[in-house]
Amino acid sequence: MTYCVAMCLADGLVFVSDSRTNAGIDQISTFRKLFTFGVSGERLIVLQCAGNLATSQSVINLLKQRLDGATPNLDSVPTLYDATALVAQTVREVVARDAVALAGNTDLSCSFLVGGQIVGAAPELYSIYPQGNFIQATEDTPFLQLGESKYGKPILDRNLQFDTRLEEALRCALVSFDSTIRSNLSVGMPLDLLVYHRDSLILPAGYRVTEDDAYFAKVRRQWSLGLHELLGQLPAPPSEYNV
Amino acid sequence: MTYCVAMCLADGLVFVSDSRTNAGIDQISTFRKLFTFGVSGERLIVLQCAGNLATSQSVINLLKQRLDGATPNLDSVPTLYDATALVAQTVREVVARDAVALAGNTDLSCSFLVGGQIVGAAPELYSIYPQGNFIQATEDTPFLQLGESKYGKPILDRNLQFDTRLEEALRCALVSFDSTIRSNLSVGMPLDLLVYHRDSLILPAGYRVTEDDAYFAKVRRQWSLGLHELLGQLPAPPSEYNV
Image (tube, rainbow over all chains, first blue to last red; front, side, top):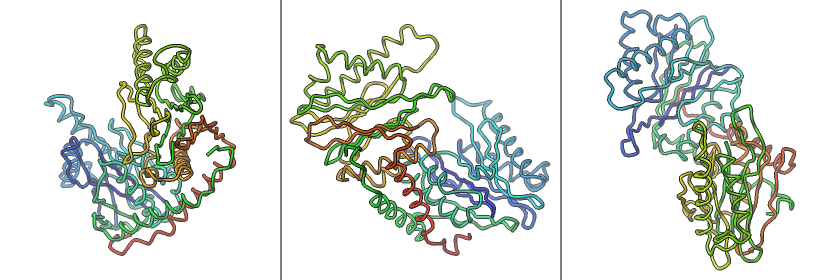
């Protein structure tokens, strides 16, 4: 399984992905699920993926290979909407290609989040379903998730709005990942994260949060202790609760 | 869908259930999912259910009817293990009966949590799978859930141990329900809750938490504000995070 979150906010974009893949409980590996395309000063396009690893890796490889001359490609599409349609089309192409010779009933499908900004337009964020159609994040619903989304959704539902500052949004995402990783073995470290400031049109370096990351360890510890204290501070139930 | 939590702790048992049932998004009703059996001074048996409503209602009705003379019944079984096996057997009986004439491929299955205490033994808690086999809560894993369990699992994983006091465990359960209700429309108010103090062997009255319950509203508000503050107090990411 997988857990990815992306946010499209007033100040820019935030992306966080885990890196655990598994084929059965006894075949667990680490693979990056966050990929950056773009041209500095002109466009940034970030992809996150979940689902069949063979399919998603093929999609990323084809998208990269085709930067070299193919039309359309992610360096030439005029809008982020068109970039998303191109990723979706490439998913369909790979699934159709690999399904032909497929033994058994392996699920080849995968999902993508596509976010970024192209000069002249606002930042945008899309989620491509396994079927290839896609939805767009809006001011009402400024975040999208892939994979094991339920454990970490309440903290996002409670705290994330379109005008949340990027740094606070990133902390919220890290807490969402902490909750998910604690409760579900199929989501695991390291995490790949990337924060993009609106209109900067630079390709951010991003950061890989490893098991021994001091800041993430501090966030986890402080959050855990804080929750425990909060719980202790809640008022005692009244007598009609019959506790 | 449904969300039920039960806890088997050093000091006793805690049960909380939601009451929303739905057959499609446009057919939503309120049905109690928490039922009490027992004989004051001798035994308390609490059932919580999820899944097909026709099946679970039939199971509860048959278990009640059979208190009047049938053997075994929930007033006569010698152990909570036997009580659980009886509930499981009754589920299989109802599913087998109703499957015979079933048009289409309706899923008749349902799941139960069975917790309680019978004089002479410690409190126990079991979870019956739709297939009819069942597992028991232990000191290592003192809580069991039914239904939409993921949203509210992190707060339980983080804060609930076998020696958690009953009142704190109840607050933890209420927060778990708050998170679930906020993030998933298929889980809804009112909540039915029941706290049992070990060795009391009384049949507790329990309590129904309605939409306008002042205490639950206060817990929700205080928790929500507290989380937001906690998030604000987390340290800022270091420079290598490239935020």
